[in-house]
Image 1 (tube, rainbow, N blue to C red):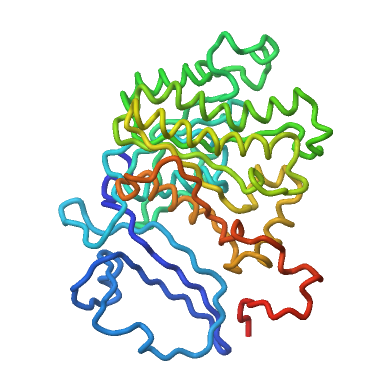
Image 2 (cartoon, rainbow, N blue to C red):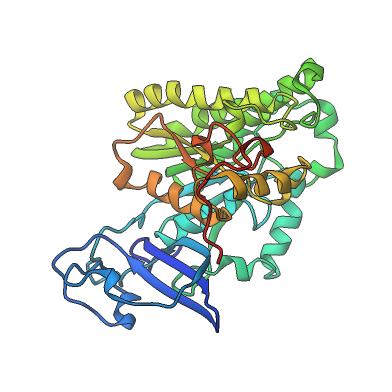
Length: 392
């Protein structure tokens, strides 16, 4: 199994800060453990806790400017030593992540967090991107991105060709079958991939849907064609239904499925058109219904993560992602950049036994932007006393 020496994923808060005289980088780890004795920093790397013997505010520090605080996966102990605190332990679990084609999106980050927690990783990659992805992986171009908190590299047990727009070979039109970008690949429809995973590994425990595509995303919804609208729904929301339909029979009871959505499902985001906002709304609605059906029939949980804007290659295709990132920095309650690993770690939690009672939920990981009713950077609020990040 991949990362089989990793007992679990504990909370590691990484702070990068700047003082008036020097750059400081501090690492601290936290998990929930009470009554423990204080340990040295070196002990924190393997077994972390919050000591209640002294308040944290007893330390006096010079004024600092926080540039980044990220929660990362961190292993806690060896296989033979019980893990202290409250770890995310996915050892013995197997995850299939659909929609990874490079090393800088949310799908990749989720795979890393699941691997850090001990899960075995299987990947489904869009057929036209398969050759480049496998070649880059084989030649070590992703090695830096594969590094896990314990220093090892994330292992991908197998990469499967996948086009989730097609459920079975009978659904594939002739022009796609003869397309040179699909040449050399076989068994890449959803039903075929599920069957291949069953033959290769038997069962899975975690299913991740990291797929979205809208060919007319740059168009106003009122100017979107029927074909473009239905294509967005098919690739971005029905593909999740199809994955569940074909993978649920090979999922172990107690398993979990996770998809990725966006705030455009419930708020107006100009520029996110072509039916994509409708597709995300459908995905969130389907999450609730599927949670009921999968929970009753298979004892599998279904949740979706509403992630904030990330400058991934896929997102840059929309054309205005940098604007959305800047807007979030100016208007979200937490004025910081959103990092992919923050979404990855949320997914690891949702996939773990720690979230055993959570299903049918949309979980926001966006620095709180979803809670805002207005953009506080608007000139209309000039002169209003609005709390801002202390950058002094």
